[in-house]
Every structure is written in structure tokens, then in C-alpha cells.
Image (cartoon, rainbow, N blue to C red; front, side, top):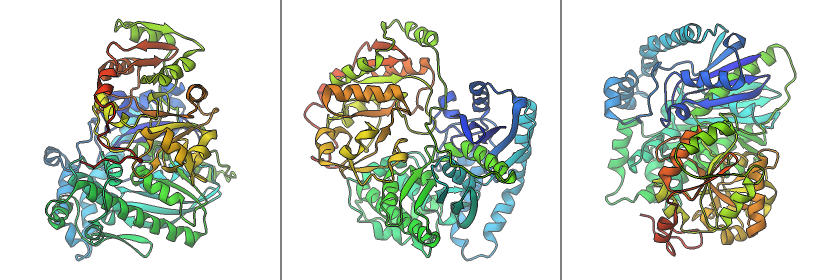
Length: 604
């Protein structure tokens, strides 16, 4: 049976699953070219039906993530929590403001939280009715619908794509369906729900507050805080811990503040002249400690050694490394679409899992071979997109991989567009920008070309078989590192030879590339190793600033020209850029704004 999965919240999208296997998954942002697009994912539904050749009448069931939420029929970009215009015009914003104003009363006034959700209930019911109508009237899908709890959809997304039969499953984010975290004891496909933590006590929200206080956009730029944290000292940790803490297997919002009130309180408590790198270091250190204690408590209670996790907080790769190193942990799996972009997959897998249990079928872990689940385009479409620009192209069937490796060894930047697009937030070789990993100034000049403000170094894509040479204490995390979802500490050899991808805390966020997962990309890295002795290349996402990762050949050509890169390898074609990166690269020659692990610079 083919099951359609839908998520219509932040980073909305759709997926199709058959017999527990993900056939296609895509998010609305990639199609509409609007980052973190939210709303009902009409385009994504059409796309996964097309990608899988599925007639709408052949959909046997529909799983929809999140039970209680407002419906947005039109798709818009994520405005952020603190956009005043959104608050004035959007019903979600009205409730958001109410929560900000009266959040401190929640622990004191019995029934206040319940009344808050009762006021929102009519809007929730309207969404559930209307989605049913949309699917019937616009898509001719009349299959049974089930709405799944937000956190259960996160949990199923990671458990059913993990290699585990038995695992502790932990979800953790800002909030959804009234909670910020669920814990499940899962054995042989049977989920036992152990605990729910109220959204009021959300650690993820506090991380978002600090993102906003530091001048970035909450729920969007938290990765900048993670990178910036390594450049500061956690001198404000006590201030933050007086507001959010771990207690007895849960989190507690000791500050009793939410949203705008939380921002006001944090700013009031910080000393004059506070530094954002120190504030970032403070929330990162506190979040690592709270999450470690929370997960360790439940691992000890259940006796599990395998840990499967999902939810927006686990986009924080340094927290994930800390969980891998717990004395209770044997191995770790992070779902590749760990944030809300993965909820469509989770909802479809949740429905599939319920049918499997009803049929009393024994559970067999399927794991996840790869996440190349999006669009692919043929040679003719690719050639037409390039020729429309007037750029010259070489056709190199069977030889494109060594040609890319040679250009990388020469110090050129190569944008790569090949095969099916990746699902999830990471570019994993098919929609990537590649460069040699030994240039310590690359974070400065390449980010300038791409018009990005980043504090994390670029990530390395490495040969899976070279992991021990490059990283320490990676045991138990190799499988999830195939999807660039965890950091490892680096060996001295890695720090010396790959300084462009090693952060100031001596960590890197690798993609470990197996030959069977992506033969072409594995060959590129192998050919690069033959030429340089280094089994790794820089891999950053192929996109224009503030746009999602490229999807179509036209997207790729436009982004390539806009970014003035050296080469575009698109399918079996190699295209030389009209300008190239040399001028920008020379500007940064011999210096680095942010420094490296061996030569840290002062954070600004």
C-alpha cells in the first residue's frame, strides 16, 4: 500500500511510503524557492505523486503530522516569531501574543493552559475538516486520513529509518501539539510512551530566544549560534540556568516567561556590554548539559544503549556528539530530516507502522540507504538550461568524476548538480558546492562569494573507510554521520591537512560517504585522494543566499552564475564560470577573519 505523508506547518512538505520504504520526499520550499515555506503543501503533494508515478486513486492511506494546529491554505515564508506584521494579521500571532503576556500566570492559575487550548480548539477542528476537503476536491484522494501527534511523527521518522530493533527514542524541539519533547521505549516496533514535557518548559524555545537576542532570526538561524559558541566563554550560564533547567527527568521553565516576555527578561538580566559569542557559548553549554542529563536519565531507566532522536534541537550537531559520548550510549541515529521538514515522512511511517502492528507482522529494521528522494532531470533538460545562458559546456560521460577531482586539486570551486535531490536540510553531494579542505581562509572568501554570514566552518565529505584516520571517538556514530548529523573531534592528521573544515573546538561535521550510497560522489572523493592524499573535500549546500538548495537545472545555473564560482558540474557536463572565484580568494590570501582550530582569531 502506498501511503501519503503530509506536514503543513513550518517547512511543509509531502512524502510517499510503500511497505515501510520511502519512495519520495520533498518540501515546499524547494519547489517555491521560499526558505522554510509553511502552509498546505499542494506543490509537494503533486511532486511526490509525479516522482513515484502514483495515481491519486492508488493512495491507500494519508498520514498528517500534528493534530492541533491552525491551517494556512496559502504557502508563505517563515516570518519568524517576532515579526510584528505577522502578529497583527495572523491568528497564530494573536495566540502567540497572549501566551507572551500571560505566560507567567500559567503555573499559578489552575486551568489556564487548558482554557488557552480550548479557545484555539475551533481553529484546530477547522483545519482537520478542511484538509480532508482539499485532498478529496483538489487531488481526488479519498483514502482514510489519520492525524498523528507532532512528536510521535518525529519519533516514527527516526525509529523506522534507524537500524535498531530496540531503542530509546527521544524527540526534542521548540514545541508541537502542546509538548516540546516525548520519550519512547521502543522494542520490536512497539512504542511505549514514557513521558511528555510541556511546551511551556521548552529548552528549544530558550535556544531560539538567544538566537533572537544575538541579532539573528529565531527558529531559523540557530546554527549560527552553535558555530559562534565555540568562540566564546559560557560566562552567562548561571543567568540562563536560573530560567531553564533540568529537574528529575524533565525540563523546567523557572523563569516562567514565554516569547516576547522571555526576550525582555533575558535582555534585562544580561550585564551591560555583554558579548554575543559569550551568550552563544552560555546557551550551548547549558543546552548540552541539560540534554545529556535528560537523555542519560531515561537511558538508565530503560536500559537501552541505542538512541534514535529527532526534532529541531537535534539539528544541533554538537549536542548530538555529546549524546553519542554518554557512558550509557552504544550508538546514535539522528533522522536526516530532524526538524519539521521530516514530519511528512514521520506521519507516513507512523501510519505504515500502525498497519504493520494491526496485521501482527514481525518488525524488521529497514534502516535508510540514502536520502536521494527528490527530483532528477535528464541530459536534455540539463543541456538546454546551460545553453540558454550562452556558457560553453563540455560533455564528459564516464569522466566527469575525475575531471571534478582534478579541478578541486587545482584549487578551483566546483558546484555539483547530479542525480536525485537530497531530502532534509543537508546537501550530501548531489546539490553541493565542493572545494579542497586545506585552505584555512575558505570560510571567509567562499562565504563572501555566497553572501553568507556563518560561524561554523564548512563541512567535509569524507570516504567512509577513512573515518578512523580523520576522527576520534566516532564509534557508534558512523551510520548517522552518513547524513551529516553529528560532529566528531578530529585527529591531528585531520587538523593539519584539512584546516578549512576543522572548527576552533577541533570538531568537524562530516558526511561519511559509502560507495554503495552514492557511487559517483564516492568516486570524486577517491579521485581527489589519488591526487592529493586527502580522502575528504569541502561540501556546502548549492544555493543562493537566503534561498533553499537548488532543485532544477535552471535553479543550478542561476545560482552558479550569481555566485561567481569556477566550475559547474551538472550531470555529465562541465561548465566554466564567466568570472570565477579568484579575485575574492586573493583578497583573503594569508589571513582569516575567523581563524582555525590551530590559529583561532578573535570573534567579532
